[in-house]
Image 1 (cartoon, one colour):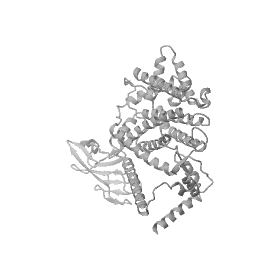
Image 2: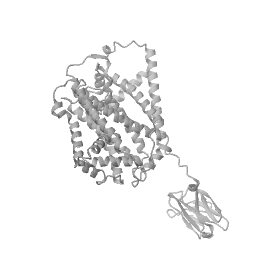
Image 3: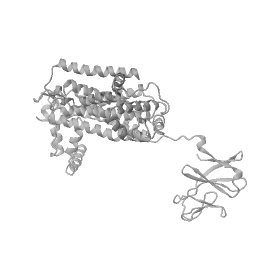
Amino acid sequence: MTEESTRDDLPELTPGRRKFLQWLTGGFLSLWGFGFLWVITSFLKPPHSKSSIAERVIKVGPLEDLPVGQARLVRRGREPIWVIRSDEENLVALAGVCTHMHCVLDWDAKQRSLDCPCHEGAFDLNGNVLKGPPPRPLKRYRVETRLGEIHLHVS
Amino acid sequence: MTKETMKEQESGLLDWFSSRLNLTEIFSLLTSYGIFHAELDNRKKIREAIAEAKAQPMPSYDQWPRVLGLLAVVLLLIEIVTGALLAFYYLPTPQTARASIATILRDVDFGWFVHQIHFWGAQLLLAVSIVRVIRFLIRGVYRKPRELMWIFGVLLLLVCFHSDLTGRALQMTGTSYWSSVRALELVGSIPIYGSLMLFLLGGGETVITELTLIRFYLLHVALLPFGAITLIYLHFSGVRRLGQTESGTQAPPTRGGPVIRSHLLNQAILFTVLFGILVSLAVLAPVPLGDAADPYATVPGVGPPWYLLAPFGFLELTAGFLPTWVGGTILFLAFTAFVLLPFLPGFRGESKGWLLKFLVVAALLTVWIFLTIYGARVV
């Protein structure tokens, strides 16, 4: 039994009509496809972590516990941040990871610089590169004193 | 002109693969899932095989009641896709399980939608599997040579029950926790088999620990779906060997177009209607997420899942005059007899009168429904 003989009872379709119907079927099928794709991709996108104020501001400790010229490493999740008391009035907060190869920086109190233990890179208190291979300056964070306590803004 | 070249390229690609892979075998495997009901010759090239499939006329009886198997396939596919999506966020430990589902429902885009479709798809799959077994019972799809069809059908129902049971437990809400505890107690009442299952599921305890949860998770996402896919494949493989006609071996009359096209069309209609029903249920009757489970605070009025209410009711009914292990043994034997129905003396022979068949089915259903209602009342 051939294909032709089984189709005998179907109405004749003109080529134009057939093409239009095929186009229509394809269109509807792609609508389904796009719909599913849209739902699945938006599902897979992780939800925004709308962090609260408590997560955006870190209390580092009383200002009087941090002498001038000293620094403190703040751990925010897996991200280290250096908070440095540059003089009596001012505080500086810098990312604690070298921009070269992601080594964690050390505070050098004598030179007043952040030194990289891996490839002898160094940064000054503005986060600019003093020497070594780092390609970019460090990211700066806003830090302030409220009622004698150091508040670090990490948003 | 462009269309001609495109077609040529397409056919070139098909031929390229066809001369390197046994595409016919793959096509045969995929169409096994309810699309094409006759055996395909794997030695032939793919074009020949498809042409052969297209030439097969549709038997006149090939109509809607037979759609239950296809429905099971489509629903299983929906469950696998939505389940895989949920697994991207679900964390299977007692401490994090419910919180991760709450994240899916509240924060993830379309998370509620995927979750509800997964839930309602599972309920529909259960319903389809039950109706399918009832249809097999009425139509006599257990008589020689279709004994295996019956066994595969009942085992698929069993796999669906287990999937639903483990899936409920994964939520770790108060209701699901205590419902699972009731179910485990029920399983534990069966001698030998019960203690073996409890041992395999979590060291012999009837509470949900870390160990139980991760084992339920493995069953739910890997072993049971694999079992369901295998059973459905085996069923349709049987259909290919034996044909669809249940009354005899004579060649059926044919009508209409080729069988494969009609099945693809049926599937498109089915999928559209099914998806409409699923979306309506998901939007209009969303199942809420309960509070977190507390192993030290029993939620009152929580029984086992609805399909276990009948055995639960039976145990409660006989608790006055039978020890639990006797009741458990009777349940186990009754279920084994149900699975092995084609090999029981009374069912092995030729077709009985419709009245007797009707009475047997009605009696079985009545007992089941009575025990379910009784079980629901004593919870």
